[in-house]
Length: 42
Image (tube, rainbow, N blue to C red; front, top):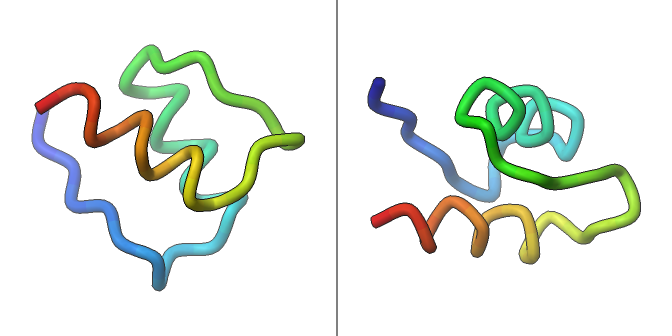
């Protein structure tokens, strides 16, 4: 699966995509923290 993630997505969208990618994120994290979780996959 390939996901293109940028800061134009809403926080809710980022969390939904992260759950599909089996990343452990939650609503309390900032958008920057969630995006960095995606970067750790690369």
